Image 1 (spheres, one colour):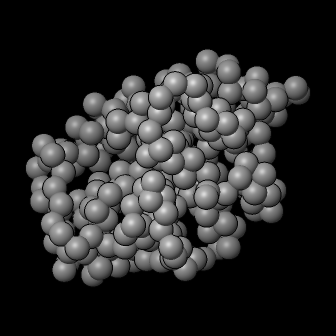
Image 2 (cartoon, rainbow, N blue to C red; image 1 turned 90 degrees about the vertical axis):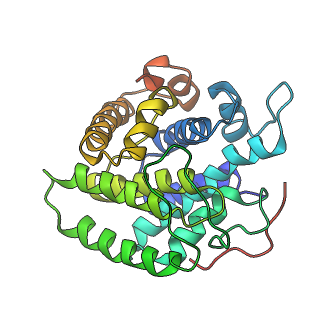
Length: 265
C-alpha cells in the first residue's frame, strides 16, 4: 500500500518545507493534474476522496487509476525528504520517484527500460536501453550544477530544458511524464520555495512544447505556475483556511500489481 494521509502529514511536519494545509492542497492538485495529463479520468473531487478522505470515490474506477493518484502521496513525501536532506539529485532518487508513482501498477517499478520506447508525435527518438544509464547520469550531473549555479533570470528556461531533456531520455517503461513533472516540482520547490504544477487544461500546449523542444515557452509556463503557486501559498497565511475550504475553492484550481522492493533512497 501507499503511505497514509497521516504518514504524509508526518513527513510534512518533519521536513518543515511547506505548511501542512498547503502541502495537502498541493498534493491533491499535483496528483490530479499530472495524472489527468496522462489520461486518468478521476475528477478533482475523486482525487480529494482518495488523498484527503482516504475513501474510494463513487462510480466505476479502475485500480490503476486509483493508484496513479494515490501514489503521488509517497512520491511527494520522498521529494520533501530529499530537499530536507540537503543531498543532491542522484539516480537512486529518480528511480525511487518512478517506483513510487507506478508501484502497485507495474512489476518493474523503479527499473530502467529494457526495450526501446517512443514518444508519439515527438521530433526525437528516446535513448536506447543501453544508452539510458549513462545519459541519465549526465543529465543528473548537469541538473545538479544548473540548480545550484544558474542565475534566477535564466533558471526557468534552464529547468525547462532539463525537463525536456529528461523526457528525451524517457528512461522508464512507464511513468516518465509523471516522474518528470515530479522532478520539476522538486527543482522549483528546492530553488524557489514554490512548486510548479502543469494543469490538465494546459495539456495540449505543454505536450507541444515538449515535442518541439521549446524551452523558452515552457520556461514561461513554469514561471506563470510558480507565480500562481506563490499566490495560493500566501492564502494559507490567512486565518481559517482549512483544507476542505481551500480544496473546494475554485480559485485554487484555475489556471494492481505490487512491486516487491522499493529502491534505496
